[in-house]
Length: 126
Length: 126
Image (cartoon, rainbow over all chains, first blue to last red; front, side, top):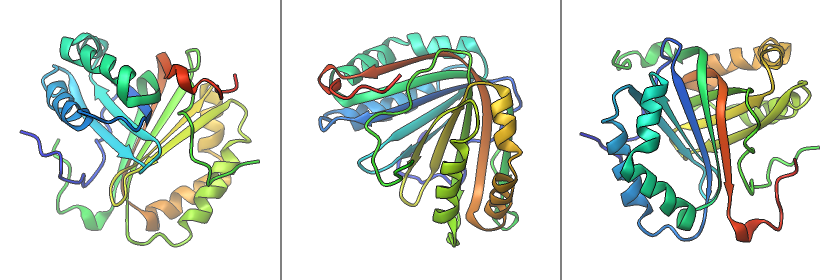
């Protein structure tokens, strides 16, 4: 179902508002035991949440990581926030993996996307 | 005023809602002529916008870049969006630097931050 090693060809598309954006910005500790496995599991699990729209991630080596998740409505976010496996991962994150993080949950009011004309041979599936 | 080479010790803090979040996710082209200089100039310029709260950036080498900017209100966002130098940089970005991008503008409803206890010798200035 998922292919974690494949580089994105484009960021998550600009959906029609309203929808929700969850920005999770992190600085990690040196202790990253089990992080990759848990992260891969969470990436699979969130796809099962009705109303999940997509996720973008960027990681500066040795610096900040930013994960932005997109959800259709507040119910979808609540389901993800309260998922039992996700809650356990959050606790593990605070215990081991994160030096600091900030979470911002926001309702999108406006969005737009850009794709270079010469790259249109493989547009985002709608 | 700014020090672009200094690594962040923590992401931008969790402000009290409401405030605005602008998520700008990009895939870049091989043509990055003048990008660094323009980016540094934009980082300085946005700090002069009344209501600008902060900015986080992460860049996966060869992959996605995500910049998240925080603003106190819609007026601050409008001022930044319509800034003449910023508009010129946006045009240059579409002409040269970006393969694709998505911009999401959203109003924060909820936020929280985490900082490990042993890292508290240098808390974020409030």
